Every structure is written in structure tokens, then in C-alpha cells.
Image (cartoon, rainbow, N blue to C red):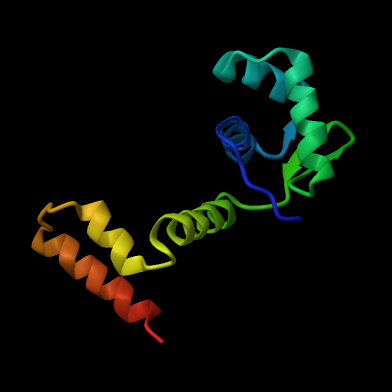
Length: 119
């Protein structure tokens, strides 16, 4: 997959693909019309565009994602933290919490995560 930044419509489209994959292109057209209000041509254009970028595989009218939701979420989260907080995870957490208090359970869950990922 080449470097690719998902816009909101790409992500909403991919959410449908991830939820229903593998999905026939005709069914995907129906789902996109129902959930996104897209026309048939819009869905086929998006399939072709994302297939060309290595995000999807469209083989024999069956659409399959080549990247997972978790991979995209991780890349987009990293890019956001890098761009907005100069890569500082503590800076992000400070801004995210914005003075809110954590429950004892939430604090314990975060401590476990930190321990798990600590070098």
C-alpha cells in the first residue's frame, strides 16, 4: 500500500467494506446507497481508486480490503499525534484529558497498557 491518507468519505466507505467483506460489488453499491447516499457510479469510482492505491482488491466483482481497520487507525492516530503534538504521546494525553479525572479502573487500565508497551 502506498502512502495514503483517508479522507472522511474514504473512511466511511472502508468501514462498510470492513464490516461486510468480502462483499460483492453490487451489494456494496446497495450498501453505499443506503448508508452513504451514494450513486452507483460514486461507489464504483471509489472501488477503482482505492484498488489502484492497494487498499482494496476487486476480483471477479468481489471487494476485499487489503488493509485492516486497525492498521488504518494506527497510521492515522500516529499521523495526528505527530502533526498536532510533535509526536508527544504525553502531550496528546494531557490535551485529551483536558483536566478530566480518571476513575481508578481507567487509571489501572492505562498503567497496564503502558507496562505492556514500555521498552
